[in-house]
Length: 101
Image (cartoon, rainbow, N blue to C red; front, side, top):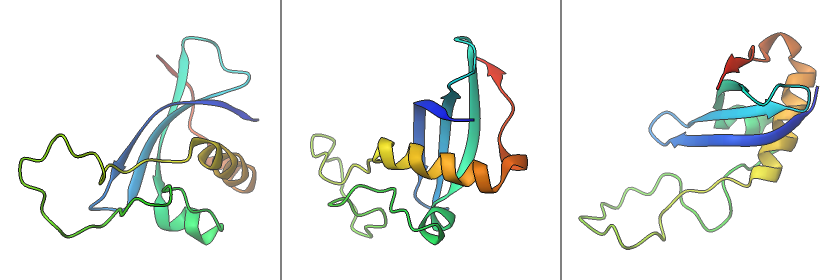
């Protein structure tokens, strides 16, 4: 079991969760796995998934400033893959089943 690629992700700032879709090395091209990751759990494993320089919980309200992407949250995908590989080795029963893409 090894994650080959991250297909997509979405950060839910209000719940500190990360919705992620990924493929394992042995998955077919038309398969994807979906999971919701608690960011606090990743930190418990020693991983900081949010790239430095991004404030995940900024209370400031940016009104109609869609051209300013300084507050955009981003994930370090290599760190995410490393964390997910470790997480599913420790918790193999939590590995999502493949779904058709």
